Length: 206
Length: 211
Image 1 (cartoon, chains in turn green, cyan):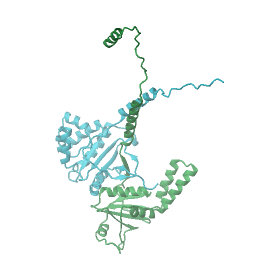
Image 2 (tube, chains in turn purple, green; image 1 turned 180 degrees about the vertical axis):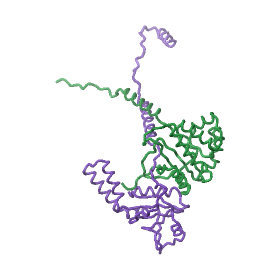
Image 3 (tube, each protein chain N blue to C red; image 1 turned 45 degrees about the horizontal axis):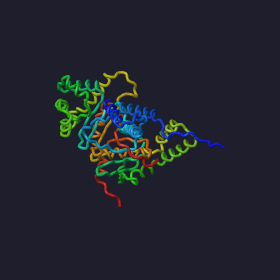
Image 4 (cartoon, each protein chain N blue to C red; image 1 turned 90 degrees about the vertical axis):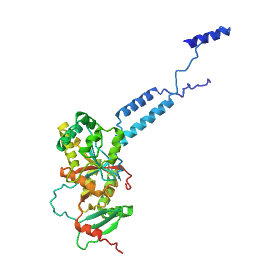
């Protein structure tokens, strides 16, 4: 109010009796920066809500009081984990003449081993996936068939055993590798004394 | 021929409805987000390709790189009930104020005897306390972790009876990459003693190398 009055007086002193008009100001304001900010916040909150939840890996342990019936090990690999990120493995049943082999967590190590031994399931799943892409197979059907392929008799079975020196990371890495290489049959079991001795007396083969 | 004049269109358009919508969404997301609770211990989870998301209702047993055990179960009522039962078993008396404070806490890792002291501390002091604590005892002589798990499940059953199977409590293990396998195995064994055979291992995401 006060401002308007002084303005009036000022123009009066000028002597010219012009009509004083309030400057016409556009009612539009530039909303761009505000919109920018709004969308920035929107993106931020959307991202944090969906990605904030931790990811998990599901695992089923064999039920404890297990009757010690020997599982058929016609296509089984036993992985022995120990300290210093070392992995020993052998194929088939544990026999007195069984020799361990050393491998590691690299692509040429464990992954190659699993992909090699699990050729049946890997090929079958690849075939199923291409089929489903051409035939418009339902996702649930594909999933069921994939599970079937992983559980087939010819598919690889892996027994994971770890000794006292192994780290938690090692076991997660192996489980992860099993998922990557599409091994459906695996279990985490306790180390047998014989296997423990084998690890301790391991000598690299020439 | 008269020139055909194109009507002059103003290049600025009315952004108001868009802005309205944007702010509506911002408000929505702001109100619905739950910020991650303050983690008292740093746990560096190993990575995996699994993209499964941790279920909502979950009991978390954490193992840090010094093999200490921490426990967390969300839910105010459940926590109250659980603490009371735990106190009864170990002969530690918690008053109403302490129970109230415990019900809004998150992860903890110490024996029940020390827990009473821990509850009364403020946030800053709690961190210090946690750094020095030994974790929850879980050896076979003093298996407090087992009792926490048992009472946690009991309290859950009392507070929420008759919930559908797919909404039941899940069990997660959040191990540090450098934790010993033996301590993780011991935790799994404790769970298995209580007929829990299905776990979620909390991991961080990594790219699947073959697709």
